[in-house]
Image (cartoon, rainbow, N blue to C red):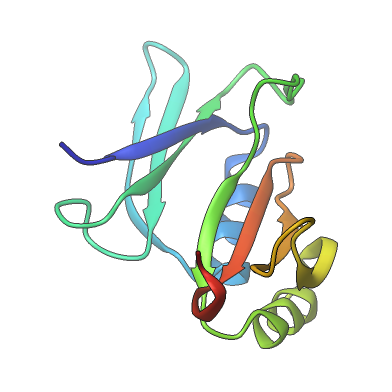
Amino acid sequence: MRILHTMIRVGDLERSLDFYTRVLGMQLLRKKDYPEGRFTLAFVGYGPEETHPAIELTWNWDTPSYELGNGFGHIALGVDDIYATCERIRQAGGKIVREPGPMKHGTTVIAFVEDPDGYRIELIEKKTLG
């Protein structure tokens, strides 16, 4: 078994696609409209779905926003240089909500960025994973 994808609902698909592709550097892997159900599914990721997990962005055409609730935590991405990555994200218009630094009670270097719908993405510096 392996993780295939994580699904999140988004209020504006084009805005979310811009964030995940331009700001985070993912690729749009596939996208399909379902007119009868009034929704679109778009899958983004860093490699082919056959070998890499993806994020499924679900856009329900008649729902402009969602309440995030308190059950969802975050998506995590491994990065080589967290400081350079945060600066690149900031320059691309991304919102850093926790600057890079060691996690509480540990040495792993992390940061958090927020997508346009308020979902948190944790950045973890690969050389400190553990």
